[in-house]
Image 1 (cartoon, rainbow, N blue to C red):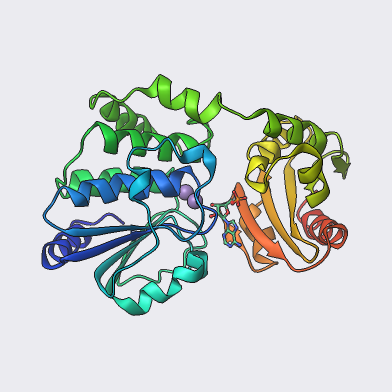
Image 2: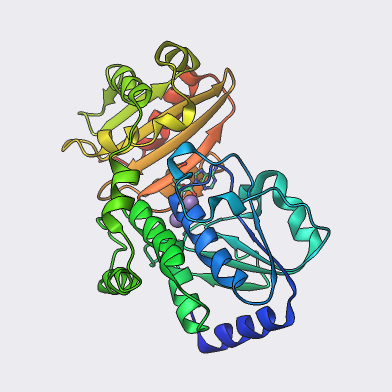
Length: 321
Ligand code: AMP
Ligand code: MN
Ligand code: MN
């Protein structure tokens, strides 16, 4: 995947480009933002005009990231080169899909199994832990600048997308990358406190509210938890505060598939699915026009939250023994 030819082609593209964009996806997560800022800050220290472009609002969880203030909506006219990171398909750019028309060349860097290979140049490998790990390989492969700020962003990208280095696609190489990042004097303990020990009280209250209304099905192998607008009002929390709920349920021993249904509005439900051993989350979410990874996928269902619960339950049951 990360072939020498691809890297040479990318090096030439960067050299030939003056205006370079690096864009995030909708509902940006740690891998997306850490990768974007890591690559963006690295390119910025070359003599280039670099636009770090957001596609959506930045969740509070990540405002501590080095360089986050650089993320803006695109205010340029055209781009010679656009990097799309951690995005399985064009739709994941939301309103920023128009960037495809404004850019001469598009580079697609991603690790989703459902990636549609939409770039002029594609660095897509679903066996890799995170887009952050791919960005590390590209920075090293092209001998682009790396410093503490960049290394900290890549650490956040990799740690947050691997459940703190615990998922199947974590390899010895992933750990070697992390070890090398330590050599740039990253403060990993500070980053871990920010990532994993800084939950707001409102979020904890939402967590309790949601979890206490969970439904278990199929001998408790399927868990479905809902977060409604009413719960948000009651706990004073925001939809982004649902982070961590679905993983908590997945970690129950009997659970193979855990669903979180987020009521964005009365007829728009965002689904997050996590699986553990033998159920393909990407396949289930694909049935609803979404996708992602084998163990973590998402989709949107345009129906009520009650109906969405029925629909995902029916789909999941097809894959359970
Ligand atoms: P989430 O449950 O939103 O944290 O997403 C889990 C994984 O599925 C992430 O890697 C997302 O990029 C991917 N994903 C979420 N929603 C969608 C969607 N509607 N279409 C494609 N991929 C998605
Ligand atoms: Mn992502
Ligand atoms: Mn990712």
